[in-house]
View 1 (cartoon, rainbow, N blue to C red):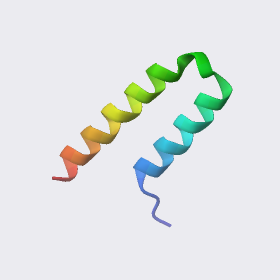
View 2: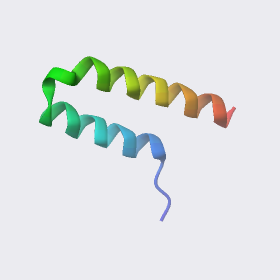
View 3: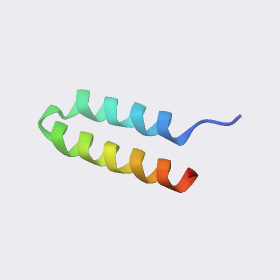
View 4: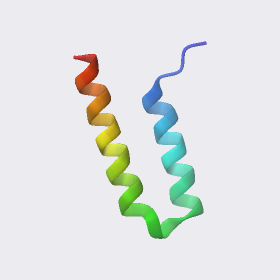
Length: 43
C-alpha cells in the first residue's frame, strides 16, 4: 500500500493543530516548508 507522504504530513499537522492550537503558526510553517521541499525533490 502506497501512501503519499504529503497526506501523512497533513494528517499529523491537523491532529497537532487540534491538540495544541497555540503552536498553529509553527505547524503551518513546517507543513508548508515540507510540502515545498517534497515538491522540489519530485521535480
